[in-house]
Amino acid sequence: MRFRKPISLFTGCAVTAVFLWLVFRNLPFQEFLEALQSADPQWILIGLAFFAAGYLCRIWRWRQMLIQFNTSLSLGRCSVPFMISIAANNVLPFRAGDVLRGVAFAKWLGVPTARVLATLLVERLLDLLSLILALALALSLLSTGRMGLQSLFGWSAWGLFVIACAIGLFLLFSRLFERPVNWTIRRLLWRNQGLSNKMEEQVDHVFQTLASLADRTRMVKLMFWSLTAWACEACVFYAVARSLSDITEPIVAWLAMPVGTLSTMLPSTPGYIGTFHFFVIQVTEALGNPEIAAAAFAFLVHLALFIPATLWGGACFVYWIVTRRCTQLPQET
Image 1 (cartoon, rainbow, N blue to C red):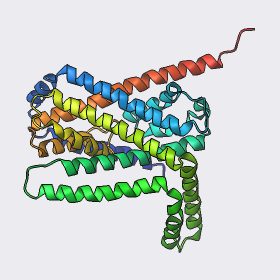
Image 2: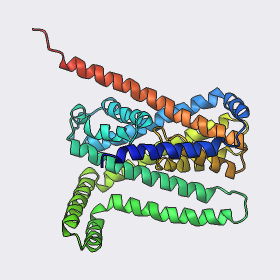
Image 3: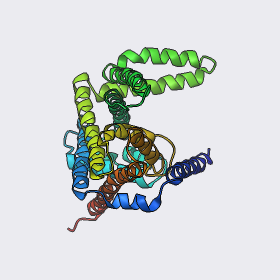
Image 4: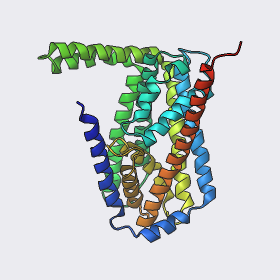
């Protein structure tokens, strides 16, 4: 057990190294730098505005889940732990920011730790639903212009729509899935009754959490804010694509966003270096854009998402530390 984290860290570094090698092995580095420098700053600023809007939607969504446990929570107070967790994920391994947000900020939020952790579960399911829908829509609307691929994209889109519907039904009618899930666990673990009981206990906790966090009306609202947040992120990709004159098909941004984001689920170093860039480049080239422009697009998008989130989260971390110290100072009599 004690070697699990070092092995995971080594695996992430190795995966990052492999994907970076795949990105740069045949890339003319000087031309790549020139492509980066040619970006139109006006479009980059537009992208940053959409970045801010998207994260405000995410923070608002999280607040909507938390206020049923603490009605006095403001958007600003929720933004502090949220952005600290994003920045921590960018610079620390093992998605430490998620753990930090779930455990370290219960007192700050005035919400029990178990409830905060529960909101993270719902948040992840909502993000997955939004990304799968975004990928399905992009695949169904975009034409590659290559024989056979358009049909393949169409079938893939239908499959993703089915998965998205399943996740949506699970979120809206979670209690209907509890018995089938428990039945499956009992059948799979029938030889280990102790493990089966523990798994059923955890599953029951998950379903209680889903039921308590979101009734159907609230869940529909949470889905709306999720879709809005990821639409803003797609606009960041589009703005960056428009900033590069060599990107001849900027519409690729709508496909690159879900593909690049889902690629961050692969093991890598903090900040998702390598994996994100490789898959965004592949998608961008597949729709007819030049290799150098595709690489510049991938790295600029990553910087547009990484730098402001890390700076914003860092500022929130300083504010949190200062605020905690001020509240702990003894009051003068």
